[in-house]
Length: 349
Image (cartoon, rainbow, N blue to C red; front, side):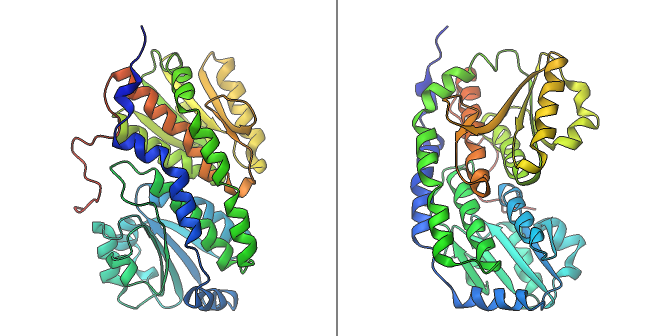
């Protein structure tokens, strides 16, 4: 029976389709900052013991690639949910540590509590989509995204934040500004190319979801950004059960759930652990499990994203999951991304 795709084309869908524009606008307003240069110089001279990365929801998951970039060059860094930092690790908020906080609104309940705790105790770099927010106003260095207003589920603000965090990482690692801008620009055409085929992607996903009652998203390294955010947006936009796990964690127990009603989406991810992810795919298929692989390539599969530099792959990895949200909503016959209980800004802890 044909599925009516017109039910999909509400505000969330329009936000999805405007992701390339959000990336372009965000990239266009990046500029060298004396405040960021100063903090970068202090970091380079060993003035900070630790870089504390923090956020909630997709802002938290999106920090995974930056965490890896910083630790790969020898900078000590850790990643904490803002609520956990506020209540259980506030001792980290000292002048000897650098805090990087990400929040699309810049005014969630957890961010406001963090700002109250900081009060100048630790230098703060903010990444936000809201220039007039408390987070933006009270930061020592600010990187703005230009995604515009977003209806509900994080999509264009998420990919714009990933772009901003890659820019921030390059600045902290003292990479040339012009080279960074040129590199980031290469993410725009592949995003446009992939989203142009949204209808074909959704139609090809519809039979795949037949009989599925649970989706696992699995990956390693920088792909943990898409794993965590992907599971979150599936639940938010379609109220469909989904769980995000590292590939190693999936083998430690959840592998027992492989079966005809479970779909496992594996992210091929960075070259360092790609062979492990491919082996997991093979092992699931040996048990007649239902699984697919998100990877780069040149075909039109909804799970294949266009080729681009590996450091920018996290920006595109979320796109196949967004197509899954549309397909599941189409199967259920309701508009995706329309909240029943949640609000765009979480104001209650």
